[in-house]
Image 1 (tube, helix red, strand yellow):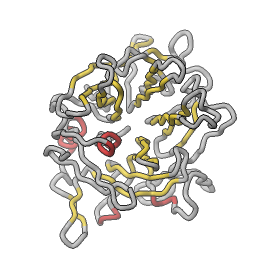
Image 2 (cartoon, rainbow, N blue to C red; image 1 turned 60 degrees about the vertical axis):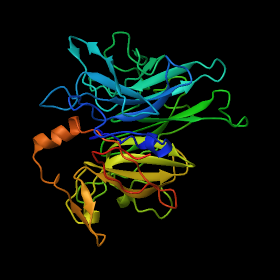
Image 3 (cartoon, helix red, strand yellow; image 1 turned 180 degrees about the vertical axis):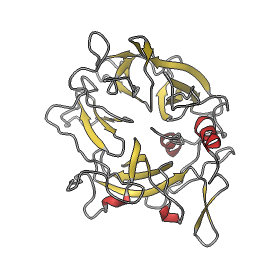
Image 4 (cartoon, rainbow, N blue to C red; image 1 turned 30 degrees about the horizontal axis):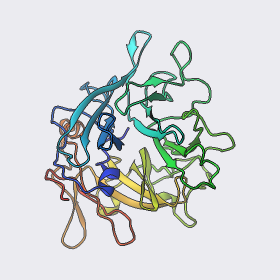
Length: 360
């Protein structure tokens, strides 16, 4: 699962906003948050930032039975509104547990109608690939790829662990997909990364005439070994890029930033700055298209609060070594926004989440 929020990465890379940390109430427990910006369906012309996440409601295990959403006007990220549970699924006398979700918007070029596709990451048996459709960002959502009895996904449902979906809007009239208006891609995997171009009509199956890229982002173990099948060919990397530089673990999340594409994911980090490895860190890669080729960007943030010394070396802050109840509290409550400054070549710089207001 996405072990902590993506720090409003996509939103804060493109907007100048005011926000304060923690940005949600301390009683709320929404890990795995995906930030999205959509037009407010109740106030046309106005936009809101939406956080879509799983919902920690049990002390002994991750997540819970619902996908939770909060939203705020993009001009004031201190005014968050609880949109409630936007999706649950009950079958055969029990509720499915929902892990890290995603939500995307598709607009019909002819009618202008907006459709919202929810990828809830159900953990129900044979329902991990469930995909849902709705007419508003906050639902209601209806599954579109389940059998008539609602117990399992239909054949062709290919999506797996921690899905991240990217919608590429097409504006070039010469493009083969101009009439359709978009292409869609999904990225997923746990200790193994896969990328697939989606059928625009189903949004849950592979597009005809394409093949999955598998493996996609190289996955590594804590001790630095590649986890993908021996002899795997990494077709989505830049020539000469070392597969061991990525350390993919889970939690894919892709955004476009300028003319580049940035993939953020949980990955083993720590040895680069002289401490033990953890997968509770966010790393990133950047590429020229949704399917690459990709270069490793390194570490964005380490949940242990790594701090830079005056001589340029690193050390962990007081968060390092704390006991599991505090780590759980951090997962559940201390959700934070942070601005990610970009270097002269356009790449984001490492950042530290704080408990202060994010500057404009």
